[in-house]
Image (tube, rainbow over all chains, first blue to last red; front, side, top):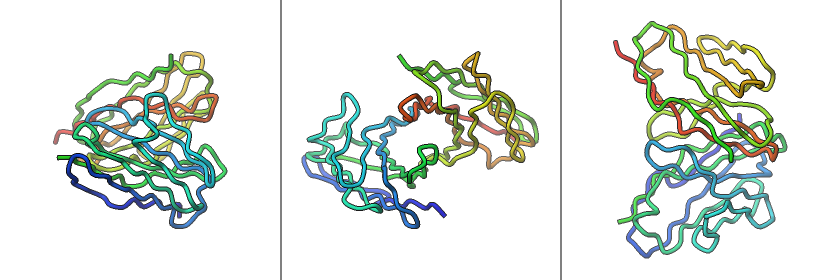
Length: 115
Length: 109
């Protein structure tokens, strides 16, 4: 159990366009979802934490108008990268947890390349 | 500030034992996690320590010393498939995971 999916797994987009990444918890209700970004050979960087039905909490230095997060249901959160630039190219990973903060289940990640 | 330190890269031989160290300084402590991450994939959970001592799980063991801010992951009977990055993460007082940069483990035949 505790499966989290992400879609798409890979996406290439042109500079200036927007890209939406979906994160779904398939067999449990995720009260909290986390969005991470990881650059090559670097640590996971938490971008934001979202609780179902409320606004996401963004980490310092993450532009909330650029990285739009919606957690509309207990099984779905979306991250939209608006007006993407090449420096936004990265590996984006979501994780989800139910009420237990110690259990985070990770999605398979989305490789975003902005040309 | 909060800091997690682990070696950037280690090399070991198939069948041998390797120990990956992690030291941390965080605001509060609610446990330390080890994850395995293969290239281009999301991390997968390996272990969780919140009390001092050694937790053994098959070929993998994890040790914690809270007074020293120190943990290690011990991998025995190394297999080629163990080649991956190993991430140390600490849950702070806000129940947020603070991540190390990961240790890339290279296994040689």
